[in-house]
Image (cartoon, rainbow over all chains, first blue to last red; front, top):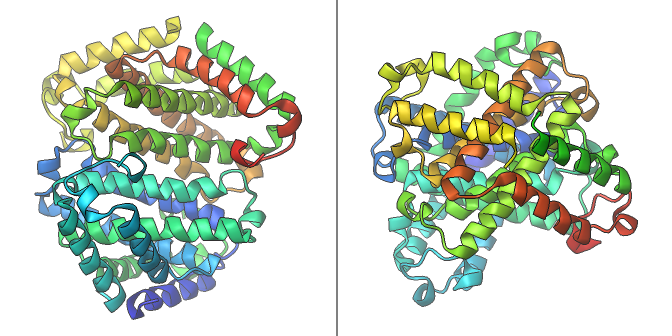
Length: 116
Length: 116
Length: 116
Length: 116
């Protein structure tokens, strides 16, 4: 894991220990919390056009940063509880994605790899 | 941002540029993709007990790592498009959380801060 | 509840009883399944423009019908387990929404009621 | 569609027309709103045990009814915009589910049909 995420992981461990919250932090519950926070990020964009989503107001951008933070925190936490290194997993996934979506076939195309 | 996430961010930029995919990567669309991947992680746990979620089979753990990777990749990508540093935002959020959930009031308690 | 949803509710009760699945159908788990199915509906639209989402291919429309069905089934099931009548709740909500979003203030406006 | 859902569909059409909101109600946007509301329902249960989720407080039950209402309203609305009858789709899905999950093979089993 990268230094930044390791720092978050350790801070989250301490935070939970200080509050006796490990009892609530099953992977099942953390996956729920992660989905809830992702939806709070989604909510910011639901009535905006794509163009508007590229030009958020300062308020909306601050709110987005807050929700991105929540998603990252629960992601680091569930990965820790499952014994998974998220950055290493993401690197492996990018290699797999490069094979599923060869640049020449996928160029300018929004189809799923199963339909390319 | 941490070195690990910066590396992912740069690789994602290159990946999208090689495929002419920036046209699809509005923050609105990326927030949708992030929610979809979070739900794919959630799906792994939906019929498991909390106890079972702590003891995944090797297959389920590999699947979880894959979905955690997808969530992280879209999270890094949307943060990049919005000009947000996710690790810095997460650190700020942890400071705010420590104030919302003082250890002595929150200990062993699963209530939301507004109900503490 | 309407006759149509009552029929689905009864069929779902029988379906679960026949398979001894009530043990898995806690409201917590059903809420997870509902979110997962909502995200499968969301996935259909994630890379489409709004305009494209109004003109789905026959394949995409059939897939959307399938996911809408799944969402409705889990919604009827969780409402049954919680003892909630979803149609009555929706009618109450529409009355509340009419007060939160007066037509003259909300016309052509995509703001949340707290910002009107 | 059942009488109850047809009534909601018509009321939602009028509600949107009165506010000039059809411009925001693309299937893409409505799918986002549906996912957001599903996650608000999910949030109620995220830190509860399955047992606790079966015995909600009066406050939590009222909140759940509210979120179930929101999910149903957006579901009826997106189905209307796509020209899909949700109850007919759900009936078709139950027939398909009965074939995917034969009672004798699925009894007491929380595995996905692809793993039965």
